[in-house]
Length: 144
Length: 196
Image (cartoon, rainbow over all chains, first blue to last red):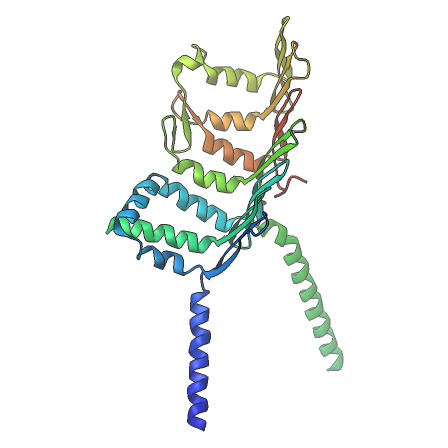
């Protein structure tokens, strides 16, 4: 009985450590609500750590193309991410028009994009650390 | 003995108070520099649209030197000599800097009024389009920013990165307002991270 309890405790500990490791880079949150009748409601919350890992499973040809496209902007992306990480929370861009509202903000260590228009509401929140890791992974893959 | 202990306690209390006071006085001086934000606001009431942009100047200072395209390199913008029209801008700026506050240029013709002046360490440009009297442009640039722009060794470059750095050291300032019959554009710098 005690042995079973020890095993259960060990497994619970492993689960907690595993969950902690998975969430160490924060969570990516994507929510899409289509406003038309019967429209889709999509709500995805995923550990951000999977983004740089998942990149390695992308087909080599597509990955090479992505790296080629992003390469000229890599120094600017690095500097922007570093600057954003150090910056206080701020709404970077906000556009309001008849029937539409777009907002890009840095909020609590994440880049948050909200779009609300006549057709749909979109919310994307990505931890800056995860974006940085992905960019660095791309750079590392490129230098291999 | 008790009296000596009491005096020691009093001395310790005074020392603690002094330390706390000095720490409180020194804290603002040791605090991190206040972040400045470059704000752009475009208001188009005719179409019911507004655009707000708030960029931390420290972020702009970090990103700008990494952008390299045709005319922008390492935070500096190349100006073709032809665009200077043979004017020695550095000598001109030296003359403006040492001159007292004054109105340097006033042009009035049937189409527009243009006024360029120096006041309180700023260069001020006012343009009014007479054909459409609602069109007005006001530009206020601190001389420190102009000096920073021309701080490079090369004559055909403007150091935008240095100008951004100078802006972050300057006080709150309304840099540009452009108003026409439909839109109003404002560009300013302050230490608030919102436009409210």
